[in-house]
Length: 311
Image (cartoon, rainbow, N blue to C red):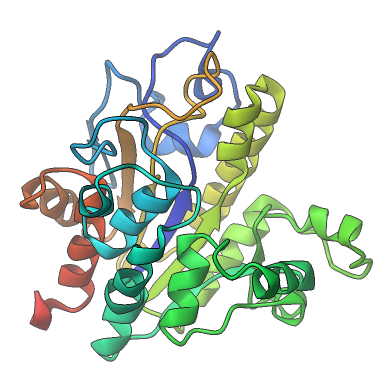
């Protein structure tokens, strides 16, 4: 089997109130097709159908305060309760003492140790590499985990050749950075491109951050735009994926976008949207994890399915 994981920063399960929750304002045909026209909310946290499962995952990690990206993403991508380890939520970047954990236990590292071929789909402009070189502590978990697992980060040439996807999905933002020749693609084309990566890799990860940015901005129009791009991406994935062997996983690290009345993150659960091959098995593994159905359960569940001889 092969897994495409789309990590969507800062999206929780909130109230079904279009006044505060852009998920109930934006036009999201792909999501609605997977969820039977009923989007997830605090009253409708679960969905099960022949092709799709939705369940809520705890992102609070048993720790007081508001969840943050540094500890949340560490938990999501290693399976370890990072907030409990350091005694607090921390972000947006991983706490210094969590870096050895990420290097040793990330989903990328664990899959490579088992002889598999994970792939990090995000392509970065040179400005990103220059910034990280000057500020090595200011890098989020997915690219840091990729580097530490020996997976070089993708750049402009990879984006141009179709081997990478822009963090904004379409590549539109690259023009303002001086990349005049970057081809702008549709969200659906970006989704099809990601599925193409699954033909050479058992696990592909894409990180999408615009949802968290819109949540902090408390901007309904920006939030709907970010969700629309994500939905277009999902539409391309659904069109191109092989349902006999491909599994799509969409999840987050903490809530934010689902409640635009607050500028901060929330303590809402986050969705685990599973679609395709063995989606119910992955849902069962998430529910039955010793930590309970939380973001800590995601990496152990993925390792157990992709490398069953080690699970």
